[in-house]
Image (cartoon, rainbow, N blue to C red; front, side, top):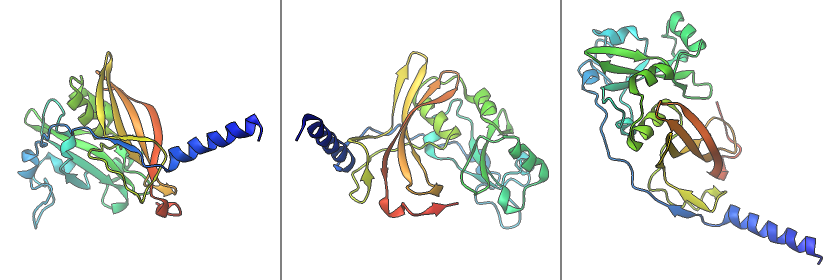
Length: 245
């Protein structure tokens, strides 16, 4: 065996080992559990509503065109100011949205889409200075919540305006195919100009393979978000032939 062949086999060994061995798991403590303030929406009949009127029918909420008004994840409880906040989900395929809202969505006036062909888009409603206020875009969201002044707020902000997710208490799952030697929980590090967040993204829509990727995101103190790195880390091989609209 010549020298080049030997190095080629060694390289294949390390690639195979990296892709098939059990990864090292690094866990981090989750952020403080800060419940989202939702009383002002509960008082308006949200999210359950009532038997004879839609959620918020007697308030300005009824004019916002939300298909659903829902309580957000506690992961965004670190937003500051801590205004009461609700998720406003727009479902264009429900047949209940008006042409004006459809035009706004077509013009990009939403914070993020849920993905695929769902026809669903996310906005937020906050209760600020005694009034409900609809936040249609990330720019409007930024005017309320920037500057970003703590790691907890950075995490809440990014999770609120993107489809990235936080992961804690990760464990090895032998049914998954891993592409990395190390798998690490979500964490936030402080930088001179903002924060770096280690997050995850699930490629649910589209055709397989459906990867879960680790994503590193920078957020400036002014609330500007930029993805700085992404690596495919694992997938469920039983879903490789699955297509999701």
